[in-house]
Length: 199
Image (cartoon, rainbow, N blue to C red):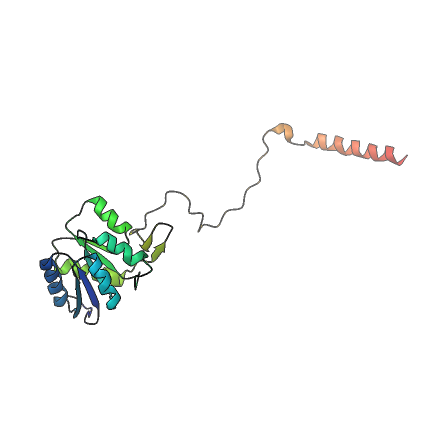
């Protein structure tokens, strides 16, 4: 299907449904993956991550006792996480907007809706390889940059543009301007004052 060789990649597949784990494993094997580790739920996946060097996680959203969101937050934020930069693909039948945003905010790298196909999974893996997003750390978030597109900013981009020098302000009214006559009168007055002070 593609030009990438996934033989040496270790993938952790986490789903509480054994049939779904078998399906994802079969797809991964068809893509050339040889090192596939399975987890039954989030807590099981935590243990697997501490025993194996995992290159990619494919996790289901809805599991007990620890779901995919809780597991993703553990990977990204826990001091016990072996690699907080591990790519995570959330695989779920829940495609409502709030679920997608919840996955994004938990630090998930990619989101996939069930039913899964080999082409869709391959596309997500290639996207992670070819267009990796930088990781962002804020007070309340650590994970891949959540912005997927660069939208035009409607105003002036002052961070990039060199500021233009300020122009001299024009006089507000003609009464503040010194006319030639007023200037001459002022200079004559100053000269008279000088003459008077010299006496």
